Image (cartoon, rainbow over all chains, first blue to last red; front, side, top):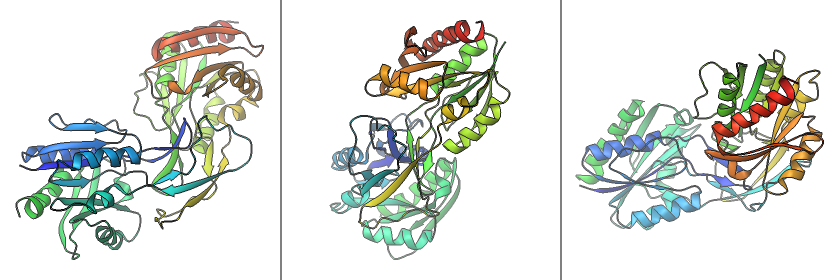
Length: 209
Length: 209
């Protein structure tokens, strides 16, 4: 039995009290991974951005809104975990300035300076010690190449590569890549089944190994 | 029996194929208004951005994503309507440039130039003729004053004023304002009940009048 931390869903980075930057991540992949991990008898903690998906009974869910909150909550949970699956799509840019009141329209363009948020998976993996880390890479071009570059940069043990069509879809099509560029699995179909495939690879390669 | 067009929910303005600007509008107020209008025997068309809420059976729903799409669909539906209730929270800024591929992080700030989208309610009301238009104003300060300014600028017959705490909530607290600054109704509580209150005012003032 392993204690597995899963990050899931999108995050939001507010410009003002009303408007924010985000993406269409639904949390379905994270919910599928949680269910698959529970099926294998593991203990599951989920740190999730705002989603409408229901996580399975039997896992503990910590809700967050921003990437900063996701990092803080995940850092805390990772202390107790054996491994991390970073299935969330945290917003990776935030406005440098956040307005306290709703920005009123003036008829003029609005210049927004965005700065990068801290990378949740890279930050936790940098200090992982004996714990394992599985990342997700969502790319619209050169999926494999970019996924492998991310795997290395973020110190992951495995990287799940998928395309933007995964966003808010009920199905997914992924490759599970190793640091030396091997493909350990390729899974396509409903997210619940794809999640079982990914968990199977994690079980063989990182938990039972 | 009136034919009522309701706009509902948020819209999204994409920066690239993954990231977008939006707000937390849930579509619940729009769904409540649709139900209340159906209860009064009206015909209801809803133009809705991406939401998880279910609109009542008996109304026709046109799904859209961006503000441009909402305006186009609403303009088309407004041709057949007796009145418009603009309960949507369309994204009112869009990136001037939209990247075809996911923008890769570089470690540097990202300068985003936002330009205003066309105002859906103002655009339709400018050419309303004998049709009536009810707008919604969501403000974080000076609610009443700003709502009345919007009423005038957008050529609305009534303006519903609410605060940012309405966003994604199950309850709301609104005032219904006339062009001469009268408050015709003030409703607080579950959105379904608030919607019935608003529809009652519309019925008395704009449909039966």
